[in-house]
Amino acid sequence: MHHRFIFEAVDRSFHDIRFKVNPDARSLPFGGITILFGGDFRQTLPVVPKKGREEIVASSIIKSPLWRSCKVFPLLQNMRIEINVPPLTIDGRNVAFRDWVLALGDGTEPSFLLGDDPDPSWIRIPDKVRVEHNGDALDAIVNEIYGELHRIHGDIDYLRDRAILTPLNEFVESVNN
Picture 1: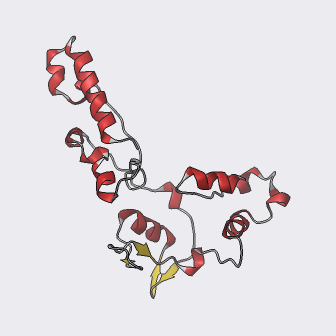
Picture 2: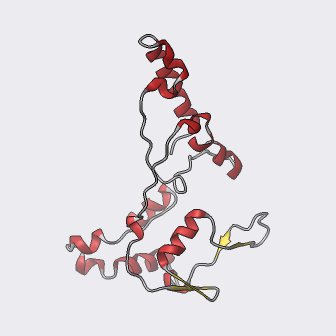
Picture 3: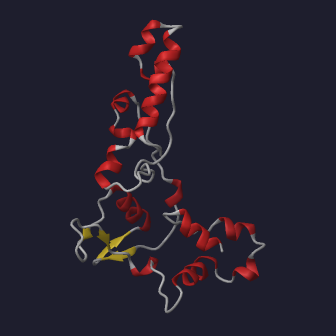
């Protein structure tokens, strides 16, 4: 997601453009033009280099004055997690995988302090979804996700059902190489 200032600049531009046609456009968000935003705001915070959590959250569109004019249509079924996976055991609790993923996204999964961190920002990852390794962690992840890739590289369905997600592009390059 982009910094809220970008959306606010587009809003001002539409005000100026539409004002010539309709003088009331200056009082309407985006000059009265309907705008559709899409995405999961839990996963798409703006990238703000060298800033902390507070500044990053403040740069989100939901912190913009424009947000009050937005009508939110939530999707009711998360298709990415509608898979049949056995329950996980986390700190003695039996939790469905999809519920655990949603709790992570909602920020309701219990977290704890580690080291000198000022905020509890660490979570427990269940054994069933952790990849154990004795050497190269990246090789272990690729082997866990794709198995014998050299043998099944032509099976489109097999490959389509698997992915390795990374938080930074530099990690994507490592995985792809």
